[in-house]
Image (cartoon, rainbow, N blue to C red; front, side):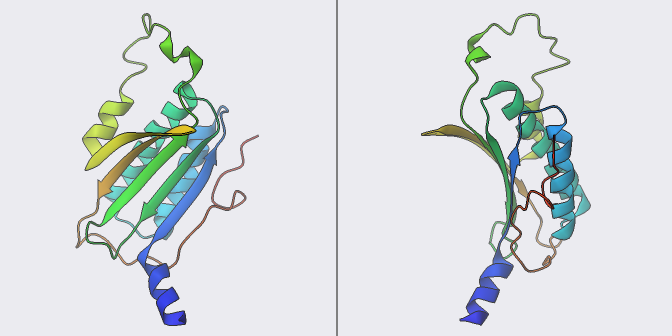
Length: 165
């Protein structure tokens, strides 16, 4: 039984972090995620792309959706696809979403989806009761992926997710 559990723990890594709707949340969540991805020993190029995707998805949830939002990052190094999955779930569109976007400088807003599309092997949106999940999967090449530390990491707000006042 212990051997089976040990094998299971090596097969998946998970990081879950609440996303508070406050100034500084994106950078704090990004820093916490960077620490987790470093612990997982993922290749630097994958980490760089993942952090950009995290930033874009979290920013989208803060600007366009109602709180609360939650970030989930997972990786299954033993899986055939070797992908890093990134999801941000929120409670749905903000009431202001129906407002005209006229007057918004395209240089300031609107590039997030394009960035995610360019970096992700797959991406999409799932609408479900109580919320919306925007997700992206980043491919990790077989020879670039390491075996990582061999344990599941779960969010501990005091350690994994930066405290935001």
